[in-house]
Length: 101
Image 1 (cartoon, rainbow, N blue to C red):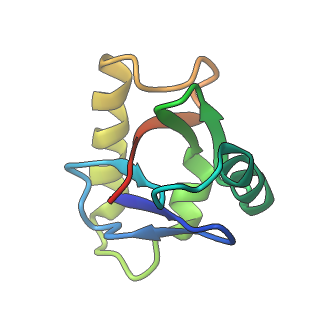
Image 2 (image 1 turned 30 degrees about the vertical axis):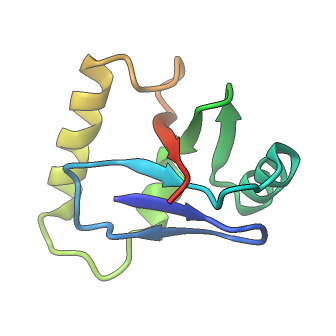
């Protein structure tokens, strides 16, 4: 599961892959632009310089055309993330490391 960010939009790609999770940001995108696009999409917020707290509700609503067992697999992914401390304190977001592919 990849959260793809451009200078104007946020999209969820490969939603079926609940075995990995990261946030792909284009090289050179200013942090101010990243903050604006995340907020305007309702997708989450930047947490420090190397990760984004992605809203779980945004992930669920953005996962289109997934298999019937997707919700169970996604919940297991979140449980694993929680066991590693990768959920926000309020449990509404999951942290994804930023990559610059």
